[in-house]
Image 1 (cartoon, rainbow, N blue to C red):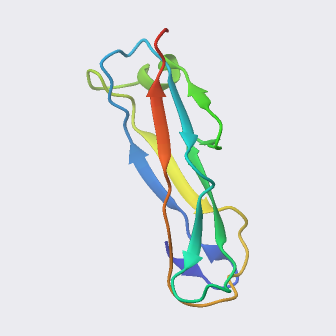
Image 2: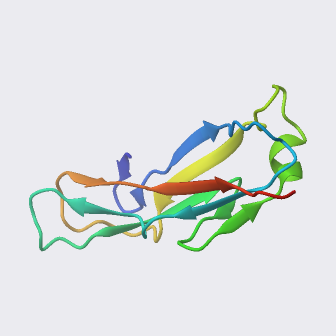
Length: 116
């Protein structure tokens, strides 16, 4: 992610498709853990909280269900969803006071529902 002084981190927008064997079933998504970035060498630096959204819906550590219709109704390929935005951005756009290199991991858990 890039950094704009006085504003904070620039977000990332990833055009994303979901592939499936059954386009009639919903998908649930959640974050494995609250996403954040930490300074690589300064453990006293405050972590940077991140916000993750899929199809403009913020994801949490609890399940969010995406209906089959919302995922596959505008799809152009067999067994794949329409291209939908996956966004990762700074949760609170504030100045980052400690310069340096930060890293973090976003763990996304997805499961297909067993019934439509």
